[in-house]
Image (cartoon, rainbow, N blue to C red; front, side, top):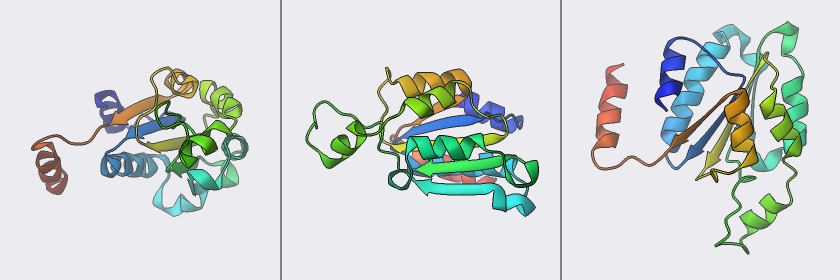
Length: 165
C-alpha cells in the first residue's frame, strides 16, 4: 500500500486498480484520491460507478475500452465485487455460486493491457486469492492493494492523521 500512497502523492495514475480487503473506509479514501487526480471537478460526467452485481466483466471491459466524453480521461469504479470470492470452505453459498458463473476472461485480458485513457478501480470486500489470474493481470497492467482491518490503535492514528489534513 505504501507504493500506492507514494504514486498518488506524485500524481502518478495507473489505468487499473484492484483494491481488496475489509477496511472499506480506506478503499473509499484511495478511490476518492484517484478520482480527484484523474478528473478535474468540471469533468465529472466522465465518471461512472457500478455495483459488482449490476455489471458483468464483459460489459465493464466494453465501457473501459471506449474513451471518455470529448476524448478526455474516463473513470470507472466498481464496488462490492463478488466475482473473485471463490472460497473452498463455503462452496454452497449464493456468493460462490454466482462467482462461479462469471466469466472473468475478458477482464483478465483487459487488465494485462488496459486502456491508458481510462482509470478503472475494482473494489472487492474481503480477500482475493493470491493465485488469482485477475490479481496477477492487474499487477502487470496497474496496481493492486490490500486493505486489511485496522489493528489496535491504528484506526485512531489514521483518523488523527486524516483530520489533520
